[in-house]
Amino acid sequence: MTSMTTAQITNDFNKIVTERRSIKNYDKSVKISREEMTEILTLATRAPSSVNMQPWRFLVIESTEAKATLAPLARFNQTQVETSSAVIAVFGDLNNFEQFEEIYGAAVEQGFMPLEVKEGIHASFSGYFETISREAMEDVVLVDGGLVSMQFMLAARAYGYDTNPIGGYEKDKIAEAFGLDKDRYVPVMLISIGKAADNGHPSVRLPIDQVAQWK
Image (cartoon, rainbow, N blue to C red; front, side, top):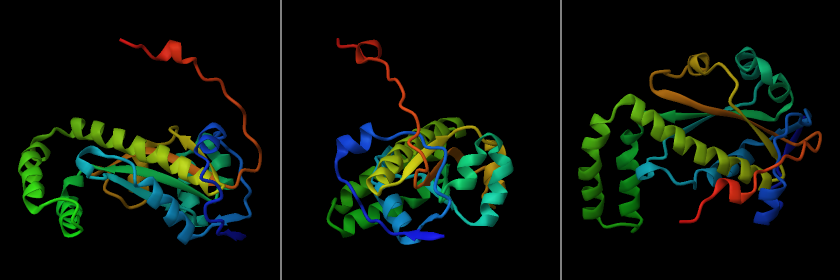
């Protein structure tokens, strides 16, 4: 296997966005290094999230054993599982407010906000997070998980890789299969990533006058 460390190959936003395609078939010989995957994930996590709680959690499924665990759970996406450098399983952590002190404490330490602002935010939201229903929190983490997933796919393009977002898999089994608490971690999507083995297919987008209204 070739271990890739390409670093960013383009910062051309227009190129990154307009040339992104969902790629299902990858060069099996290409392995993305942990260092580079960390860089791509780090860029992805610059995405916004509700109260900046960053509820996204990632499983980087890259070993032969882990892919074998995933394969029966993603029966209709075997090519992506088999040929990709990795499949990222994106989850939303329903207990994300537990990270408040770590996130906002660091914001105070780094001078991003005064202590009293942090304490005011905690007072405003602690009751909300204690009383919010599971269903409502699932909605929050799914939106935030979608934001980070899109950003991951664009970051991957900047590094010369391609991706495919996957919604067709056994969502009720994925967490437990990898030793995660299924009552805490909500599956958002799978994203295959690797060096494209083909060019994929161009796809049509609806014109803006069909999807947007000005008032």
